[in-house]
Amino acid sequence: MHNESHTTDVVSQLRQHGIFPTGQRLAVARALLTRHQHVTADQLQAKLRDNGEQVSKATVYNTLNLFADKGLIREIVVDPAHVYFDSNNTPHHHFYNVDERMLLDSGSPLCELLPSIQLPQGTVLDEVDVIIKIRNRA
Image 1 (cartoon, helix red, strand yellow):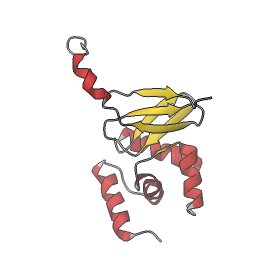
Image 2 (image 1 turned 90 degrees about the horizontal axis):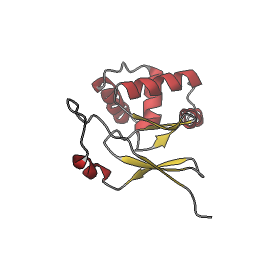
Image 3 (image 1 turned 90 degrees about the vertical axis):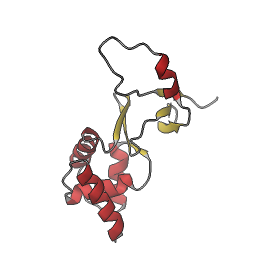
Image 4 (image 1 turned 30 degrees about the vertical axis):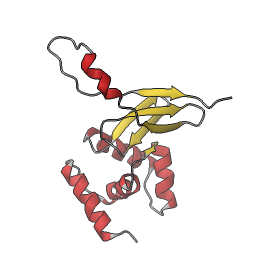
């Protein structure tokens, strides 16, 4: 059974981002927004299935894309075959372990380097995504 106050919080988050809270969107949001995490659509669908939720793969993908489009989560494209969804949408950077296919938050404040970057005239900085790819030591 879901905690009623947690469900109310999730409904509020969805509405604040202009998302109508359907049953399936609530199920995805509860599975994703309970903590900061990086998940693929397939990992999230498996988590939903383990929780007894019946949500199709297409619905999971569509819901994640809607959440990302509305700014509730961040879509992080490591490469065309590896797309992760990050429940922490505050500015931060990532390490991607190519051996383990795991995305990790970087604690380094790389944003501090940005004031020295000369932007083209007539533009402003919108967003910076940095993914540092790493491997396990042999």
